[in-house]
Length: 195
Length: 353
Image 1: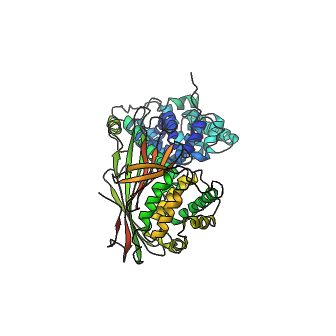
Image 2 (image 1 turned 180 degrees about the vertical axis):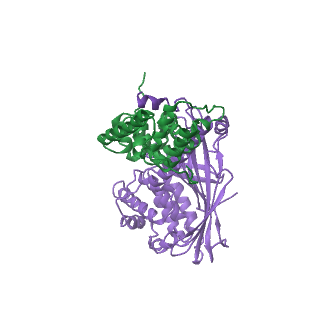
Image 3 (image 1 turned 120 degrees about the vertical axis):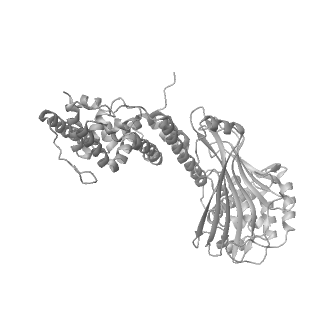
């Protein structure tokens, strides 16, 4: 059986024959969408995942051809796009922690936004809300996108050592929050100024 | 409790993307790809572009070509039928009336058509035309006004429409379905033609001297296309210039007939059905074997169109039905006007329909 063309070759070929880039979409759209949806919910994920592939197509000439798998690169683009929505993401974590109803689940028609009685999970999302954006990105690329340390480094364009330290700090904060039974973060007001 | 495991359980079972949103995202990407392909073709093949600087660059290539024709091949025609056919057209060109007195604006109406292929899925693709009709009023300094009508979309064949319907009739080219207009004010230097009026008057009117004149403008311009292909655009633009004299036009036809690689394609109709005869060349430089044709009216010598026809599918689009007209530029009307928005009273209309 023929081996599928590595992403790096498909991207490289798409510089001369752009239509080949559709292969990258077909291979990875669902994964990128799933990651984004998990972070910001279905509505924004639709917009950002489409945007991710448009940005990727425009930037394909700069793709590092030593990376045969395009996923880290795509997650990196998606993460950059998410930066503009960090406050929104934090607000959703906060709402979840406060009300025990996950706004992301609540956004789905036909999916019951079940009341989450797990105190530990609510403390977890509250802790996530308090993480600095760069630590949150590294942590969720590791836990949700299941990237390795070098892949996260590639996605975020930072040294692997920095990935290690960011993940270590993030995990430490969460562990501490869970062990203490309270979050480390300070409440932040929403746009209306209410807590 | 492992915090990573706990994290991985969070929002773990969300539904996948909706079919509709996936299709829309793919459609947006395909649209971007098509735009890119169009730009890539434009950048790589200045064959049908109108700006005089690019034409002058192409002139240089023809110069080099003519040097080789005259110096190496002795100036003979590459195909037996080519020169006689063009010699007759040259006679017709020489018999045309001289250009009208210079007017403040050069008006030119052209229609460009390009075929694109939408790749919806591995089994659903369709090809379609998007046309663009442009009316330019260009002053001597290159300033002026451009009015464009873009669209509508037309499917190349019935199978293409059926594939689009099978995909759920997606809006893959927003805005272009029923056509929309754009107006652009051209700054000095942006216009395409009259700014180089002086250069036009300097071109010799003897076929052999044209070779020398072109030779003087040799540059190192290379874009991978054969000189024969590039000469078609160059010659078509000069032939279509309202300021080109009958002598110049006749000489150009004769010179074109001597170029190696130029073939006589015989009687054809252009993309909007006007009858004419065609000469041209073939090249695979764009990624697929493609025929480049210059179509003109043999009775009046007026250029009707330049067209590209893909003869066999490129590797990237193995499902493309060929031969298919991929690009066309149709010369509709031209002449001098006193102001922007005015139509020329002495317009030359390149149409029999």
